[in-house]
Image 1 (tube, rainbow, N blue to C red):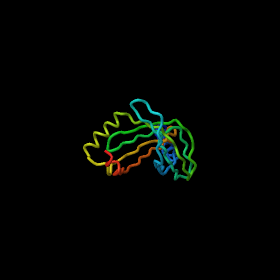
Image 2: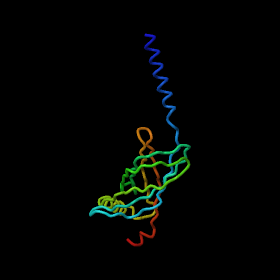
Image 3: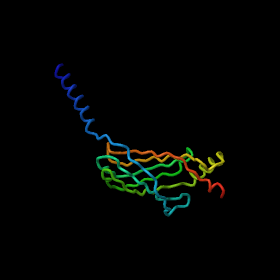
Image 4: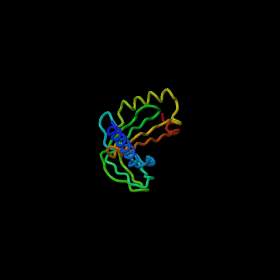
Length: 156
């Protein structure tokens, strides 16, 4: 019985010490720095979204995939994935390009939603994504803000 209790205690201590091995990282800083058109299909538009990723940590971030989703006005608009691989050195930054798709149905949902708001000012957006880095190395990010498109309202 003592042997079982000792084994259980040892296993518990080993588990707790293993948690200390995972680095405590600050969240990455993500900014959209550009959008370029790509060749599209019939019912979708494709764009290359350029993301500036800043690593404020003391260790490099290795990644082997990127995914992102964009919501505007509480509705999904675009999503994309890329299997690119790389490393962002400590206290450094890089620009990643992720192809995203905007379906005609997403545009229709946005249009119907905008017809209810009657304004293109202060449209809330949420950009969610992740840098895949293996079992425990995946870093998720969220960027929120508002879009102000006052000049676009005059052209409708």
